[in-house]
Length: 158
Image (cartoon, helix red, strand yellow):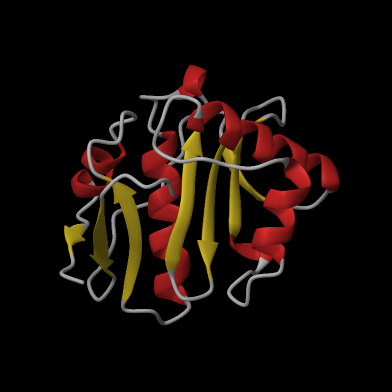
């Protein structure tokens, strides 16, 4: 995250959740290969050029996340289109925290971010967590805060 002010949001997982439904032709997948890592990095870099975050070079980025104590590659959820192209990513920490969410500029406003977040909620609920947290820049230009609040995430006082 950059130096901009942020808000801490939380989704309680103690009640039943909305069904996870990806748009037709889109499916969730796991991070598997070096090529996947390169594509995820490129997607984050493209999205963050619009504001709302920042990312270093590929090797710097991968080292910083993969060496973190909360890293689990199974918690990098990929949204792929029917051609297998990565068009969205939700990267979470083992503490039930969403580190990053990004959807390619050409695929926004199609329900992919919503589906990825609902997938995250479902995943952590099945793991026994009571909530999912994240932090988002206030006035994030991508409308991320609006998306998270639409999904039932509420402010947490830190």
